Length: 361
Image (cartoon, rainbow, N blue to C red; front, side, top):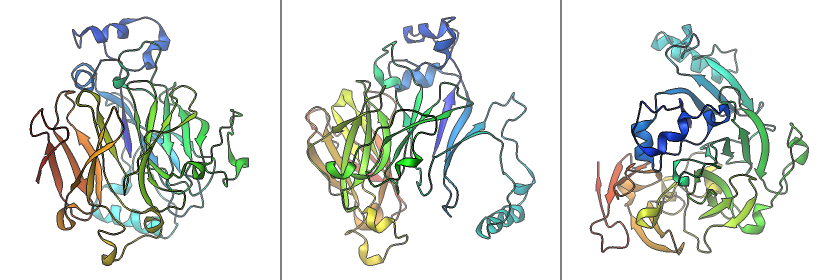
C-alpha cells in the first residue's frame, strides 16, 4: 500500500476558510492535519505531494517488514531515482529472479528512510492516519501518526510521523496475547496489550479516521481466524482499544468506506483468514470461503441494513471500496479480485436507505 503526503498548502491555493490555519508561522502546524472540512476541498486546495509512504513486506520472513519513505518531489536530488535495474524488461526480470533466489538486489527507486517493524512475519498491508480531513477542523487534532495493521501477527503498529521524512517506530497498539512481548516498543514506549481473541476479532486490515477523532479498523476474522467482518474503534491520540464498533457481524470482511452525511458505511468481502493464510484457493472454495458481497451499514445505529450480492462470475473476492470525494455524492466503486471487474454503485433515490443499483465495468 502507498500513502501520499501532501506539501503544506498556502492561502494562495484556496480561498476557502479552512485553509487559514496553514498561514500560521508556528512550525508545529506544518505537519498538522489538513483541516479542509471535507476531502473534496482538500483535493482542490492542497499542493502536489512531496513524499510517499510504502508498506514493504518481506515474503521470506527472515527480516522484518518495513515502512519506506520515497521522495517524489521533482525538485529534490533524490526524486524517484531509478537505478540500472529497471532500464529494460530484461533488467526487471533479472531483478525478480534475484529476489526469488535470495540474491543481492539493487534498489529500483530512491528510498530516503525506512522504519522496520520490531518482529518477523507481520505482513503489514493497508495503513492510515490517526486523523484526517473528516475530523471537522478541530485545531487540536494533528495528522501525526500512522497505524499499520498486520495480517498475520494481528498487531497494529503505530508510527510517529511528526517528522515526515524521518518517521520513527512508536508503539504497538493492539496484539494477540500470544505475541512475544520482548519484541515490543524498542523506543521504550508504554506497552498496550489487548487480547483480540477476547473480542472475537482477528486479521486487521483497513484503517480510517472518524469525524469524532477516533480511528476505526476493519477485521476479517473471528478469534479462530474464520471469516467474520467487524470493526474496532481506537483512540486517535492514545491509540488505546475502545471496543468493537458494532455488535453485529458480517459474514465476511475486508475494506470499508463511510459517508456520515449519507448515514452509511460500506464494507467489502475478501475471504476467510484461515484459508487466505494458506495461499492459493481451490475453485470449490469460491462463494463459500471467499465473499462476493457488499455490506451496507447504518452509520448511526451501526446496524447492517443491506447486503448486495455481486455474483460469483464478476463479483467474487470484493476488495477495495472507494467513493467520490464530494460528501454529498453516493457514487462509489469496488473492485473484485477473482471476477476482475469494477462495480459502480449509487443511491437510486434519497428515499431509499441504502445504495440499490450497480453496473459492471
